[in-house]
Image 1 (cartoon, helix red, strand yellow):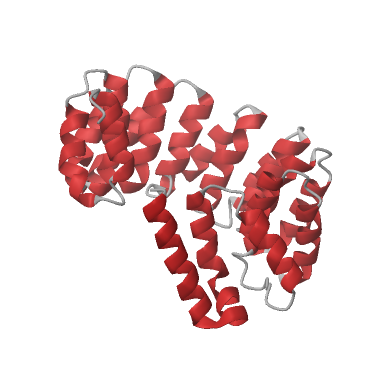
Image 2 (cartoon, rainbow, N blue to C red):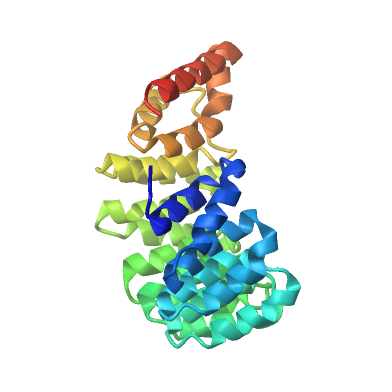
Length: 299
């Protein structure tokens, strides 16, 4: 068993979503942590599952001395905070001096505080190029149409081709008209493994006319691990089908199996219509039974 309070609390907090019965033990372990940074981050992990401790978790996050750790805890809490706690969280976000950390926290808070969207976007724009994509993608989901052109300008102004491709892919779900541009930005990356992130982000949102291009670029990625990431995105697209091509189905299944067990199980959910189409519900039931057997043998 894990005896160190910090390690035990961290492990329990990660298991809490699957095992809610351990939440009281996890909370007790978190409160026993003496290091402010560790306690704040573990409480932030637990708070979404224990809404009653959100005020305590926010206070613990604000007490973290290290700015990056404080920002990480605030980002974790932001989507779950009730209205009454948002002013405190916003004050804490604005007090962060690092532009990237502040932009990321503001971007997470903006989903609940639409009035700060322009401020958050300006902070993203003031960031170093390589730090913009994450905050842009987070913000884009909440930006009104009036601010999307400005966000697109921020992405297009990035000079590093790999970073720009990531930024464009994060905006494309909200700006479908830039999907061809975002795909072209991914295609222009000479390191094919670097295509995986933007392609995996774009794949679920592409119209059927662009799917062959995405598949072609995915298959050209030599790294099986990175190729699987794009394949995972493709099978989320309702317009993409493996049912009429057995060899492609086999290729996808083999490639997706190279990811870890959790990823593969998530992918199986998206593959279930194909499994039923090819082998009937009996095939899906057999796979579920096999997974259960493997889980018993290798927990």
